[in-house]
Length: 216
Ligand code: AMP
Image (cartoon, rainbow, N blue to C red; front, top):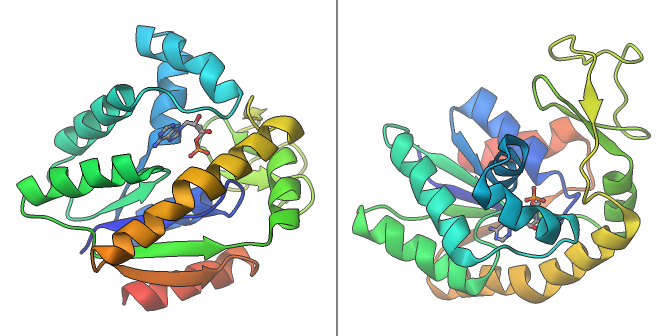
């Protein structure tokens, strides 16, 4: 088992693929977006500091992110491999993660870079919704529930949309991805980390088949 970073713009399907890697390949998924949303939902002090920034696609302070990441990694330290979803998002965060792993004699074994054309990203994001019970991600056009109003995975009937999945916030998030997050790939490459590009325009199953082939 290994440690993987999954990169991709908002709407590239990185959340969905990380969840599949978790349920089918045994990776522990660590999504900083999910950890932050849980803080907001719980009404914690950290959540209150992040809520407005996140609603506008902006980043909370690194110290908050590092605190959530290290707490999660430490409380799941028996896991053999992690898939990092949405972290690191800046070169500074990447340096932090490599340093943290090096102290534990661990490393990032591979970076999966999911590539999707920009025009499709916006459509995928503004029309997506999530099952409140199991977290399965759907889309009004590309991935509807088989039975109207019922989650295919768990049968739940409550769904929610993210407050940052609006057209204007998506544009900010895509710009931030290009400016701050894409340089992380180059940085990791300069540290001799293996980078593999994945065609994210294909179906969910086909993308996952490509990922499985890389991880085999
Ligand atoms: P995501 O679920 O990965 O799309 O993240 C949703 C939002 O959470 C982002 O737009 C940021 O506001 C915040 N966020 C998630 N991960 C990070 C991170 N590593 N650093 C800073 N902000 C983050």
